Amino acid sequence: MLVLGIVEHHRALVVAGAWVGLLAWIQCTFGILALPGALLGMRDSGARTDLLPGPLLLAMALPLLLFAAATAARSAHIGRSGRHG
Image 1: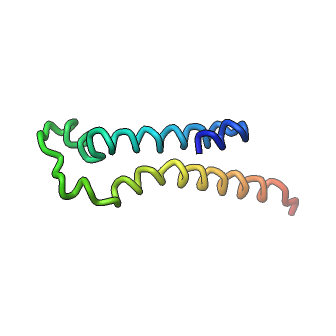
Image 2 (image 1 turned 90 degrees about the horizontal axis):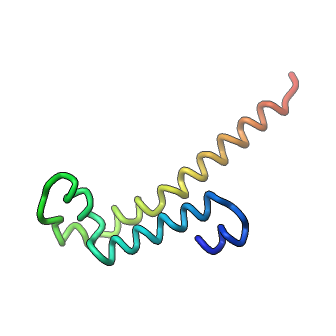
């Protein structure tokens, strides 16, 4: 996604690709649930729940959902402003 954003000159795709890369690095290095646990002062992130793909997939999909919502809002705004009625 990062390379696609660079090739297409699309800033949102570059940011989304960097976000996915950062999350993948965090998952491989610490475990995705280690960060909230560390912020809350917990010492153990819970290895059993850290292996579940749900939290990681939701976090990785977040920029794509935001991109889709922004695109839908922009096209709805363009559609409304194009009508003369």
